[in-house]
Length: 179
Image (cartoon, rainbow, N blue to C red; front, side, top):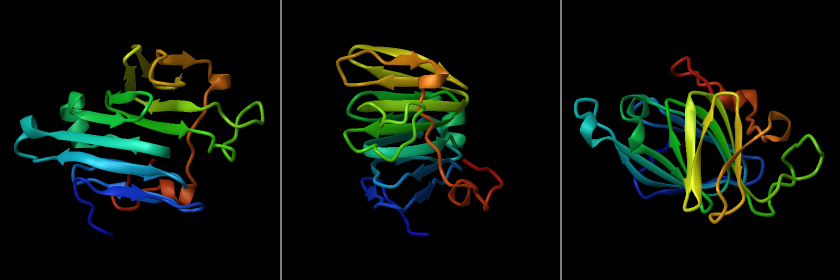
């Protein structure tokens, strides 16, 4: 129940999660070992032309659900990482940025996911972009980009990494929505 301001950097330690609720009804849940900065957040219900949200994820993982801001002006929502930028399309998605620190994340092969940005989309779509290219990832699809010099790609479901949260943190008791 702490206020978060534009410019704040938030971090979670091991075995902890943080839930961020935005004024427009958007929500982000951070996994353990995550660091996110609120670069920009502007929302005024009466003035949609001024809407803007930019979050930078330095490490870790998160799940996000778009609020009213993203529903009425999706081009004004951006999640940035060192490997790619994620733009939303009315979305519920997960993102995991691995840099030799994802050993506890389950994969079908039983080994840690490769370094880079992994995404999964539950509803809507996202666009992953970097200097090498971009790709739209739709509901039910997974994406991956290892570094800023390689184009993002869609990966087969059996190779995709789904960012999961415990049910106790993923349920939003306040609005009836959940992640």
